[in-house]
Amino acid sequence: MKPQRSLEIGTGLFVLLGFAALVFLTTQLPGSGMRVGAEQGYRVLAKFDNVGDLKPGAPVSMSGVRVGRVEAIRFDPTDYRAEVTLRIERQYDRIPDDSDASIQTQGLLGGKYVGIGAGGSETFLADGGRIDFTQSAIVLESLVNKFFANFADKGGAKAAPEQEEKTP
Amino acid sequence: MIAETLSRVGRVGLFLVRVLRQAPAALARPRAVVHQVYNAGARSLVIIMLSGLFVGMVLGLQGFDLLQRFGSEDALGIAAALGLLKELGPVVTALLFAGRAGTSLTSEIGLMRATDQLTAMEIMAVDPLRKVVAPRFLGGVIAMPLLVAVFNVVGLFGAQLIGVQVMGVDPGAFWSQMQGAVELDDVNEGIVKSLCFGVACSLVAVYEGYHAAPTAEGVGLATTRTVVISSVLTLLIDYILTAAFLGR
Image 1 (cartoon, rainbow over the protein chains, first blue to last red):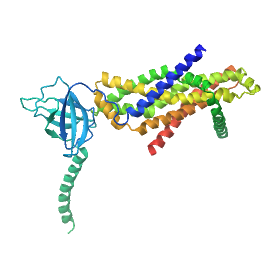
Image 2 (image 1 turned 180 degrees about the vertical axis):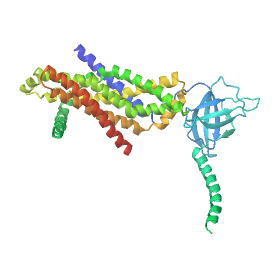
Image 3 (image 1 turned 90 degrees about the vertical axis):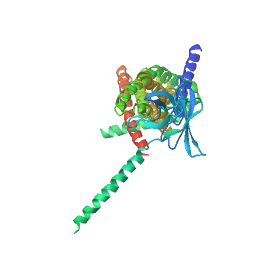
Image 4 (image 1 turned 180 degrees about the horizontal axis):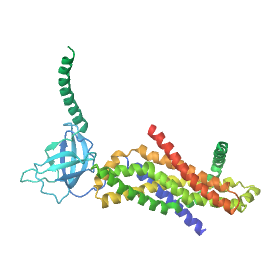
């Protein structure tokens, strides 16, 4: 009776562990399940015209050093802009309140992050403060489109006279 | 040669049908199935977790080395998660399962055959397919997806350990990019694959054991065949399923 009992308990534990792993995989990996690195600090809001594919959890950095994390991104229907909540670590409490925030890309294919450039004000950002100067994500596709539109314009202007020369 | 292969495939197929027909009867007495889930699953847990950890750590190292050349080491989470969920988790688990649980199934049933235990059951009007084969087959089929899930979670932990703790990838970027890129379909693909591998590996193991030549040498040969056939079959099915899922 004893070995049978421990065997059943062992099987139960195994099945439980397996299902816990399955649940973790199906609920935590896709979408926005778990937040890693939620830390203490103060919140700062910044509004952007376009956040690109910035995601909650992305780093916030100054001069390349991580000072915080993006906590939440939501759409503000009153002025049609994206409101990004940044959580800055408490030790970085001397960020001038006229600093600017921009959404930048890490490397060639990397993810987006928020870069903060220090301003010159004597007063500093505090909990619930706002960053007014923001620069949106550079959308690579629109940049490429613009480039090719320019290119086509120039190319067209050049090609046209050449054809005229050829036809007579 | 071709006729021999075809008839072999046919025999395995018919055997599967016979086992499945006994499956409800075996499930009606779940104690034997529970025993086999323990043998095939719980006892493979340590080797699965260790392998998962190391596979994940290697993924972390290799992925980091490759991605940092493009300056996108943040994408390590995506690479590790998709690699584990879709390919490495199911395939490596199935290969380990064939070596760890498949061999023990084959040699156990083969030895029962060699010592005339199966014949004795038939004489007592007990169907050995229901009493011996079906619970072992079902145990393997149930255990495999659970083992794969454990392997994936431990592997992700290993990749995270190397990527984030050792190599210094930002943990927020690691997780948030992974969560942004992994779809539920990717998880489902892994689950479907693990179910198919579970059926294939368990079927090969019980078939080879049941049809082993009733000698010491026969049981040894059958055990070897189980490992070889299960491994090749796993990789073949993996290719077919991958092609099917990508073609969708």
